Amino acid sequence: MTDVEPIRLAHLRPRRQPPALLVDVDGSPSAYRSLVWALHEAARREATVVAACVLDDRDGLPSAAATAAARARVDAQVLRAIGETGVHGRVRTAALERPVFDALSGAARGGDLVLVTGTGKRLLRPAVPRPPARRLARGA
Image 1 (cartoon, rainbow, N blue to C red):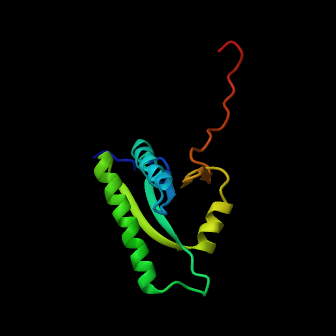
Image 2 (tube, one colour):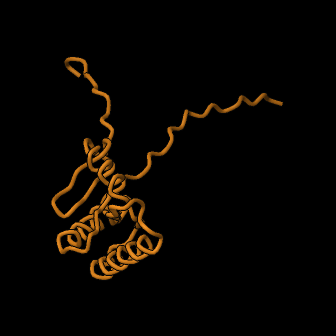
């Protein structure tokens, strides 16, 4: 019998999480256009769209009923956008409190979380890692 040597497998790199596009859905026409853009962009990038509404409650935490109503409005906007565009994929909805949304929008520098509002787009965390620079030998 011959001895069989074990096969050495190369180290596998963990898969990168797909990018996320955070969209502020406030019911305005510009926010709806941003949601439609985000759906198209997410399909192109294989990303996840997080459609969020911002809860403004000056007296403290918003009530459960207000949160549920806000999520229902966002769900309706997302379903309308999916029905009109035919683009579907990974979509999540959320109701965020104002300080949380402000913290996300304040951190908007760089790129793999894209913050989309009616006034524009901002990127959070690098979207595509840059490969290390490769130098070629002269004459190669």
